[in-house]
Length: 106
Image (cartoon, rainbow, N blue to C red; front, side, top):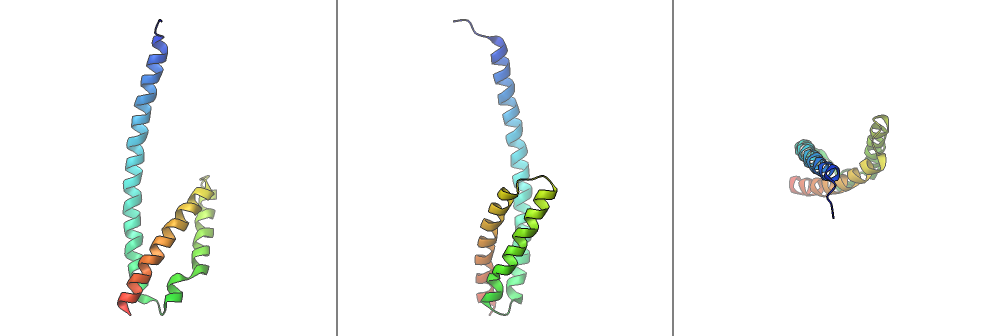
C-alpha cells in the first residue's frame, strides 16, 4: 500500500505542534503554582486574623469570590464554568488550610 507523504508531514507537524503546546501548558502551570503559593501565604495570614471558625468558613465570602472570578472570566472571554469549578476546588482546599491555621493560632 503506498504511503501518502503529505499525511506523514501533517502528522509530524501535528506532533510538533502538540509538543509545543505541552511546553506552553507546563509554563502556565508553573505560573499558576507560584500564584497559588502567593494565595497560600495570604490565607495563612488571614487564618491568624479570624475571630472564629465561622469567619474562616465564610460561605458568603466564598460565593462573592466565585461571583467575582466568574465576572472576570466572562469579561476576558474565558469559560466561566471552568473558572468556577477550579475556584470551588481551590477555596475548599484553602478553607481546610485556613481552619488548621486558625486552630493552631487560637
